[in-house]
Length: 184
Image 1 (cartoon, one colour):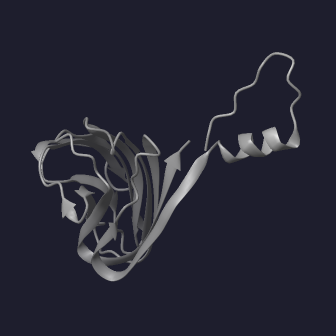
Image 2 (tube, rainbow, N blue to C red; image 1 turned 135 degrees about the vertical axis):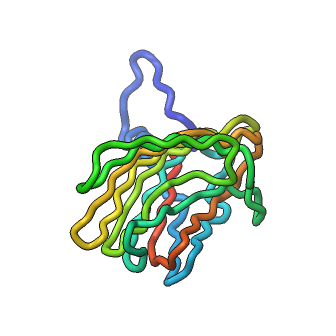
């Protein structure tokens, strides 16, 4: 879609408004689900059409006590990028105060939590299709019975690959839906 350009004195028509409405907001890139599995793959969700993306994940079943981490690796085709993830996490629970952890040059990054009663995350991904570092910021919550865990995770993947998708992995089986949107 081309950006709408206006000139001085131009009359705004219904056609102009339709173009403007189509050129704003989040553009759906795909919806990906799994069922009682330890991985969920979103292939071909990053394209050269958009520079930045929003991921929205809802855990609908599974997970485990203690809300095990859901980790992420960006993919090039079907091949995951397995090195050079730097990740800083700040997290809290209803039973403990804030904590922080950092991992450099890791094989993945923590994007969410798989609580036994539920969980969700949003993650903004910047530049996955560029030949530059991919940057991410994730906010998530995991719910395990009467316990809840909330965290923020951010960092980068510095291999400079042009990523086309991603894979989520968890130590326990989980069922969920991941929706990917391109930022207009």
